[in-house]
Image (spheres, rainbow over the protein chains, first blue to last red):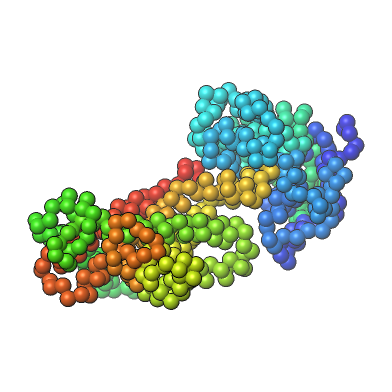
Length: 252
Length: 298
């Protein structure tokens, strides 16, 4: 590890949906220019935790939390901090591709435009699409609708759209769960090239995927962070019994 | 054990009953159209179609008789544009609030209250226009007549507002949440998300809502008869009395016009025109309602 300073850190984070406790006292660190995988069975709270990191859960009325989330040492739930500013720095890619019903070109520049960022549109579009490994496939139809793209292309467009904001962190919530194996391997390849520039946290239920693309893996079970480790060692010599049971396929 | 012949008999009879019900509705529609057609045809043997469609004076009950429908169309169009001008922005804003801003509990209270507006009998709106809207207008514009076009447009606007807000609300609800999250994830505020993603993405269905509301405003009868009066005018002054197509039909139907005469047949000619206008809009609106941008259906 090059840096000991985590870019994102949760401290004793607990989350409730109404009366039901979904996440129990999670303390987790995500480091710069690393791909961190968050794995665990369905309903273990992994997506809930991920969506706290850019305050995407603000829109869920019944959800409340305790504990702290720090990004670069700053508490993101501090009342003075505007979640809109936070989301410019912490982008997100979702389970299902969700391009805007607009052209490919407009999808890319939409974020920088509404945020009043300075940008040169043609360059930004080309650069973001190249980084997302989509440029060659769409360069001749930038002005046609994004909805005409295949699912995998749509998802890479969503990654390009996120990159266009030049975020520090990219959160990915099971980004391949709606894609076929070929599209999935393209996204995985892409993620490994993105780690040089961005810090990536990816939630996945696919353990092979986690072991292929991540540097660090966090294993969640029933709302708790059970084990964190370098991906290689977590998958080969887990220290916790529950981790071992999960990765050897005994449950989940 | 089930008795086979009995259940077969019930099954067949049920289908028969259904068929009869369908036949009755189809026959009713057909006879309405036939009646409109028959009386209109005999009207148009006496009055030329171009005199009717392009004539600028509507004086069918006075000598010399004139059958230019344009003043009635002008009255109807004024009510349509006036009411839409009020109801579209208001309805859209109500829908945005209900769908995107109001807490769930408040929404559950507000939505039925707004929908009550749609259930108020239209004659009550007419009365409301006479006893409240017109006096209010008169306080602002002293030249306002007792029957005036503006008052009619205002109450029709209030009438079609719940229709627009409810259809727009449905349109917004049909937009998958993931699209909103996509906007938020690149740093959009709620206002930016609503104005630049939600409303454009719902454009087709907002258009459909508008068309269906226009169709409703065209066909509206009782409120405009009471509020806007019975004076056909080609050039509408909002503060003066006008007459819409529907209000004319009421006037003739309630008066002592003898059946069978040309005056009586004018009703059917105006009715046919009205029917064609609303039919076109309804077909068009229903088609738009079904159309959704590709890929947004999930």
